Image (tube, rainbow, N blue to C red):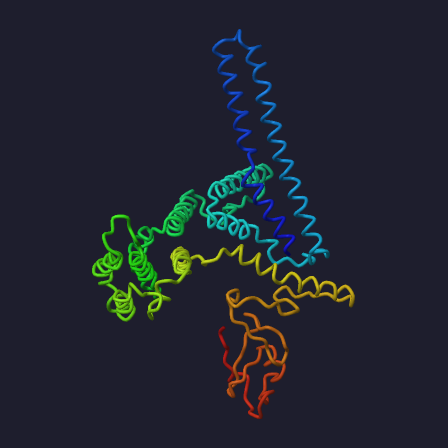
Length: 412
């Protein structure tokens, strides 16, 4: 994997240093200038075209050189991937998302917005809409039904598209101020503007931001300070004005913050050191802000596309091994609702509770839900039906007998 990361970093550096677009702009500007010169003085056509040749050729040479470097980097990256992943990817004969192109396109579109790639997202939106328009015209000419749903799963009007762009543009502006400029004020203003919604969620984002502002002022040293204690005094003044609304819910934490003031000169050896000298404070607050911002938009904190791709990458070695075993034993897996093997995922990638029936060893579904017997043992509905056959039966795990009608469905 180190070789893959190395080639990936090379491609990333090449993309950042690439001047292809600059060369194209130079060619366009030179051509436009030549056109205007010839338009103003047609007799200068031969001289203008002659002087145009060298700079245009130089720009083309530079552009081709950059493209050659980029192409070479991609080839090396591909070879590095082939060395690590020697086997082909698992078969996609059973593809649950093959008919969900709108869902996939929407995930890609929202992922681009989440990453701040607004120009790319706008281009995807325009091209998807234009392609659908062409398909609709062709269908109408053939007298076929015309699908009216938006190709990205958005409203037909441009209002929702503008809404997403404005929201994520605002989020990135606040995050930039927070992470690059250490400016908490835009985030605090946003939290206060959405205080009722955040409070309904039980969020403590506003206090986290104000607490970090207190810590920042406490540790800050300005050029005009006449004594070392100026920072704690500014923090105290801030607390007197901005912590008033938090006294009921966060009184203990406020007391701890204010209790650190007498220890300012020896803060590292005080019991408050970890609260003030925590290197992850800013990153933690930025993550909290992103999570709460997305939650108010009814979106997950992480990009669904990123989560799906990462989970797939984690599961890929297991699926490749499974494919090899199936080929050797000449067996197939025909179920579309579950995988034949368990795929271990990190805890933060587990979004739904599951239950595996201890009798059938199969994962329950909405069509085959878990059922609790009067003895409190749980089995799948199909297992219940097979064991009981509509009559009184004995629990497979204890001697208690019961009737199928006494079982209750368990909702996960």
